[in-house]
Image 1 (cartoon, rainbow, N blue to C red):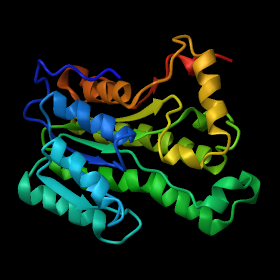
Image 2 (spheres, rainbow, N blue to C red; image 1 turned 135 degrees about the vertical axis):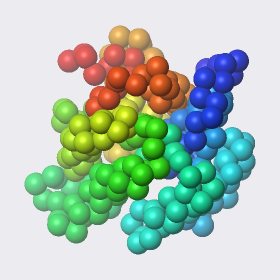
Image 3 (tube, rainbow, N blue to C red; image 1 turned 60 degrees about the horizontal axis):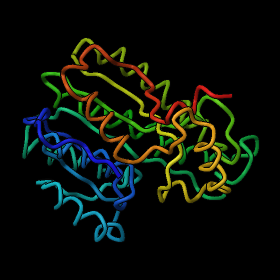
Image 4 (cartoon, one colour; image 1 turned 90 degrees about the vertical axis):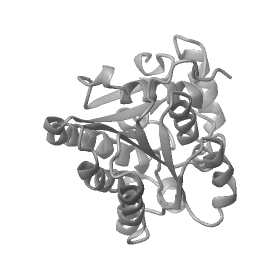
Length: 261
């Protein structure tokens, strides 16, 4: 597995929040490792006490001075994280939002049959939480910054078994565009990163996911699957000031899979 170059501290002096690390196969962990390798300082969150033993060693590996619980469905936890960042750093350069959730019975069923409570929970965690993070990060990005979220091809095309999550990701990508327009005058850029299929814990809930991986490997022009380090390296590049005029994008990191019928 390739890793980001560590020779140049291109992001030295940058400070960012990474949300969504569950274990060492998480996309959020690939991002954290890339940012750290390029010199950035990180704040890291974990979902709950069950996840804490898996995340804390990874946070220590990247030297994160802020490690806190964050379940976006628990009132006050998101605000507490940003209050702590304000106390410790007083500023923020980037946020990586790499979380999504849909109740199992909601995700497994047809979009046509989705119950209201399942739909609202899916949208709250998978879309609204990113909007809220943008709201909380805005006053900390006094000199500009970048907000990242993770999406998937199923937002644009019907992917079997992706179901209501495709609807949520479409809403998320639209939010990225509106937020980019609203925050751009302050130098804050907003992006959705769209990796190809990855064998993460979140993906394990999608039926027939192994078949999806095989299809992506066979059809992508690069004839290869993306890694969490590939995603991390591209995300870290977009946080640099060299990318200051790139905003509102859905960036596919999938070996070109999305261009193939």
